Image 1 (tube, rainbow, N blue to C red):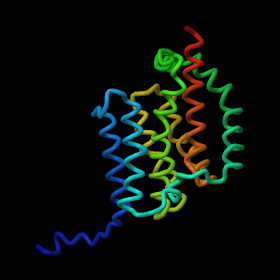
Image 2 (image 1 turned 90 degrees about the horizontal axis):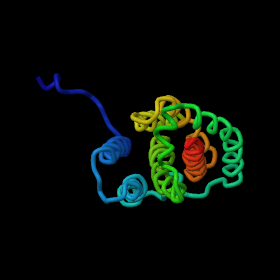
Image 3 (image 1 turned 180 degrees about the horizontal axis):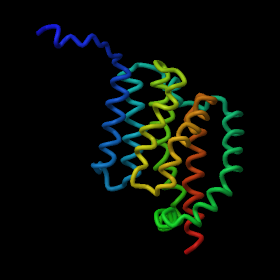
Length: 205
């Protein structure tokens, strides 16, 4: 009977913590409201809590998890390149995909850029900092895919075309973070993508 329950497995506590905490935070974001303002919830869930875990539980510098400027020259160059290539594609899709128009057009307004900033700054640190560099300590570059999967699943309920693109989009964002050792530049790219899509969709109103 004793051998029956001898599974002979050993878990690394940080990998377990990353997996459990990240999954719970995504679930809490979906099911719970912590404050009257959703974007404030997301700053707390995806930025403040992960930073606290890194500092107080893992006891490591936050820069090791991409919370730094990193290689800013490469970061700005890659951000500019993605913006130049992505802008015409986003303009076309944002105006011609009915699901994208229906989902994003009503989000336009004077505070749209600020709203997306607050919505995405924690989101990007969570996926391109906390998870990516946390998993990379144990799985190397394969962490790019490990972090991209929950990122893609978190988009379910958004327009189908966007959701399908997020698996590879998540890897692309991850590559930018990997190259620069910073979450800042994928955040800037994602902020542009989201805000520009809203502008494109709203232009039809």
